Image 1 (cartoon, rainbow, N blue to C red):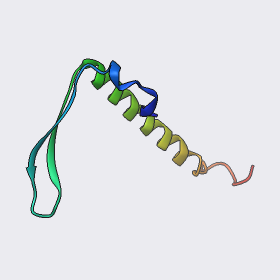
Image 2: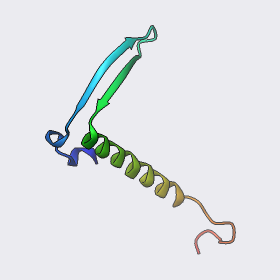
Image 3: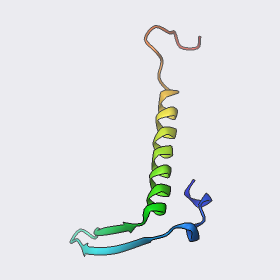
Length: 68
């Protein structure tokens, strides 16, 4: 969980508004330093792994019967 990381340890994290779109959305540029990039990429990678593991638990291999 990203909240376990103390944001004071991040070297650079700046969000810059590029433009606001007619539909109410907006485009931003995210400027991150090396430490911040490492934290964000680690968080994203772990999140993807958790989702894949959870999805994998719902699947049944072709050669195995459910409940065995």
